[in-house]
Every structure is written in structure tokens, then in C-alpha cells.
Image 1 (cartoon, rainbow, N blue to C red):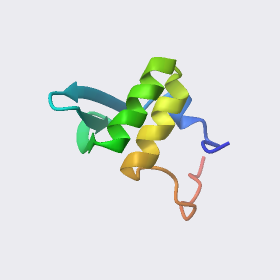
Image 2 (cartoon, rainbow, N blue to C red; image 1 turned 30 degrees about the vertical axis):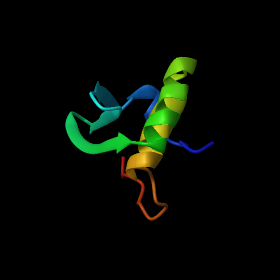
Image 3 (cartoon, helix red, strand yellow; image 1 turned 135 degrees about the horizontal axis):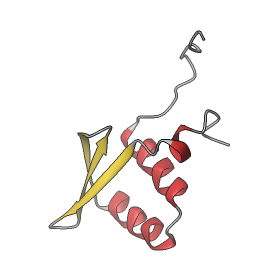
Image 4 (cartoon, helix red, strand yellow; image 1 turned 90 degrees about the vertical axis):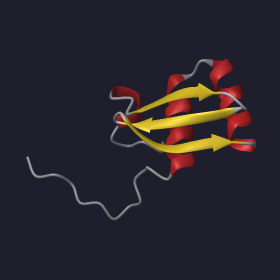
Length: 77
């Protein structure tokens, strides 16, 4: 599983807004971080039609580069 900490399913940090000319604004915790177009926009449309929120969140994380890289330290409790 890509999201071992289960952040994408529980918190759903990504949001999006479709804009004209087949473009997609991507937001991370309320801040716009990317605009997707072309092939990425087409793939998003297919995922959106499937209505699988986890897969949409995972796609947005990978498309924008906002996902765990492996060098993060665990938080102290």
C-alpha cells in the first residue's frame, strides 16, 4: 500500500477545482500547488468517474510530488 500512514484516506489533504480549457487546479491543505493539464487531466477524469476517493487522492499526491519520499522521521509521541 502506498499510504502506510493512511493520511490520504482519513484526512484527504488534496482538493481540486476544474477550470476552463481542460485544466485542473490542485490544492493541498487549502493552498494551490499545481495546475494539471493534458494527459494528467485525462487520467484524472477517468478516476473521477470511478468515484474512488482514495485513488483520486493518491493520483493527486503523485502528480504533484506531495507524497512521502522515505526520508521523513517519525514524530515523537
